[in-house]
Image 1: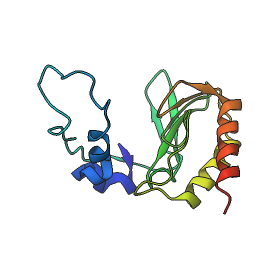
Image 2: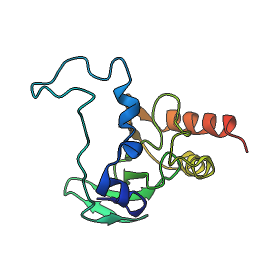
Image 3: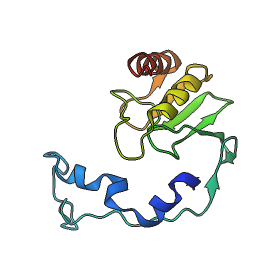
Image 4: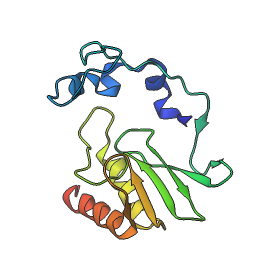
Length: 154
């Protein structure tokens, strides 16, 4: 499942949308050859058409947790986050994470990213699992969002 803005990319998985060409050129893209013998040059991400579309405020109930879908565009048009409002656990995807936020790749939109950072400044969370790096708390999320807004002034 995913946001409608990502449906075409998931259905085709072109290298341009997955950044596969970029990652193939990285010296540490693969530290060991996997048992299948695949090399970075041969690797392709298989299409994964969406089986359902998620929109802002949808809920995903998995029994032990119930997540509210947040549309968080900027890094990509269909970036979403999942927030368990009961526990404050937030899966932010690539909307926010430890390290420099990427906003200069195909599909990125800095204006939308600024709006997302503004939303995240006021989001009530306890623990954030970003798309990269270690988990962090609300204060760190606010610090990252404020930093982005300061450096990305219009």
